[in-house]
Amino acid sequence: MTNLEIAWTLTEMADLLELKGEAPYKVRAYRRAAGNIKNLEEEVSNFYTHGTLEKIPGIGKNLAAKISELLRTGRSTFLEDLRKEVPPGLRKMLVIPGLGTRSVYQIYMHLGVQTLAELEKAAKNKQIRKLPGMGTKTELAILRGIRMLKEEQDKIPLGVALPLALMLKDQLLAIQGVKQVEIAGSVRRGCEMVGDIDLVAKVTPDNQVAAVMSGHPQVKEVLANEPERLALLSNLGFKVEIIMVGSEEFASTLLYATGSAAHRQKLLQLAAEQGKTARDIGFSTPRWLAEESKVLTGNHEDIKQKDKNKTKVIKNPGLNEEEVFYERLGLPYIVPELREDRGEIEAAQKGELPQLVSLDHIVGDLHMHTNYSDGAEDIKRMAMAARERGYRYIAITDHSRSLVVARGLSIEQIKAQRAEIEQLNQELEDITILAGIEVDILKDGSLDYEDEILKEFDLVIASVHSGFSLEQDRMMARVEKALRHPYVDILGHPTGRILGRRRPYAVDVKRIIELAAETGTILEINASPDRLDLNDNYVRLAKDYGVPIAINTDAHDLKRMGEMEYGVITARRGWLEPKDVVNTWDLDKLLARLKRNR
DNA sequence: GCCGTTTTCGGCCCGACTGTTTTCAGTCG
Image (cartoon, rainbow, N blue to C red; front, side, top):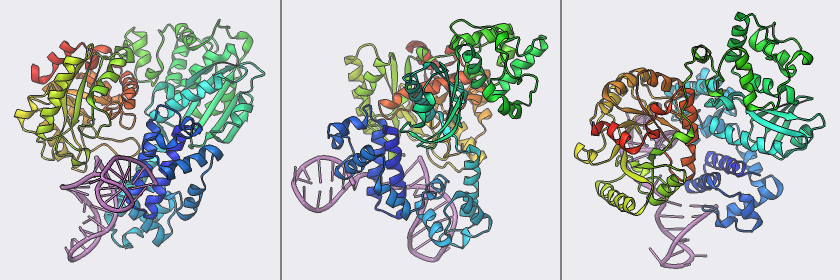
């Protein structure tokens, strides 16, 4: 059992215990344990083997016993008993903003509602407002929340899907008869939310993929087992699709399975314009998808069975061999992140594809928290970890005083932190620490410290952390005031969305981008895979307006500094080049660009 | 349920906002 699976199991226990009305500190202990395990570098099973589970922070005697049972048997009698007591369907309702455990349990007890469908029905039938402490507003919040959930349709964030896909890739490579594996589909394109995980494997006819993967400990159910296609449902509820083909079909299959459908369609259209058939360019629909694609694309020309004899055999097919298909259309290679039919084929034709930013270009991280506020590590450890990543600078940006939950900094703490940073800058070589702050934008648009304080920082990020439900006029006035502030260098997570959980607050993002351009404010791509805020489309718009972007992790611990990758993927999907991203610049150039120094 | 003692018990992130009430419980960050 993987750390992620254990963490998810503990989280389910926490949810069910909370629904049951258990003591809040007990519930929090489960959640903390889950969080610690999720972030753990080492496998929990190693601790188990050595009998040192209780060495893991937040794991005591009780939780160690529960984890031992999980690792020994793959099951938990404790959880199974809990599920009998509290219907697991109630957990999904907790995602609805405004509905907490007390309300969900009330609704269950009074109306017997156990699923989202039943909840929606009860709300539509005006049953909710009859319950004590609930009224029409709650009913509307429920219907709104269910609408949001329906939009997501069981999708999973890239931050969960990508690590899983990489792990599966490694595991597949270890199976007899597997020569190469690549991730495909929306994961490869870097979409922020994905429906399933697609992998394309180059195999020999006697491969053991189906046999091994069907019995895999993380597989809950085999959804389809065909000669060239294996569809699985994982324990965590994700769909995984493995396409198995021979060498000569690998590249075309990868291209096909990577999509997007719109991009594919456009390529075929271009081929037709050039008087070529799909077969001419070696881009015929794979057999395993022939039926499905009829529905997906409605294109009947190209879905005839592939004639292997007529397909040009490509030497050493692989990732780069996808280039051949583009070449045959007279195009340069188009990377997966751009394959969305958002003008990439036209740009390729004109030789105007962007030279996209990549992780290698990133030399700093301008948004991170320490144990001065709600981070887990001290400044030095964050700085050393950044240096190990090859960064040249970081900005420490803890929370401001209004954010009490996050232990926002008092004026005295700001001074103490500044002194410590100066000391560390003397001590540490090859990295510069900037003394920054993530200052709250208060409800009236004023900032959480006076200007005399703000001007002392090297860099200021301004973010909204309260009053999310202001209507658009007031919210925009608030953000505009912050953008116009002379000491605000970066606007943090500009829309405030949390994927699958919280909608963006009521802002006009286009207007924010215009204002950023006007005021010289940098906009953030918050790289946390829960946020990815700005998203790819707005990033592209910001680029069009010439607004520079900072890709920041907002890390609260060492591990999450690694989430830079997701921010970079989002930047690439937004067509950004290194020049558009301020934390690819050297420090002098960056500092000179800050509003305060201009 | 965990942790760290002041070592077997008491503290653990706390205050604002919202929707429901008419004094407050629940939710959220």
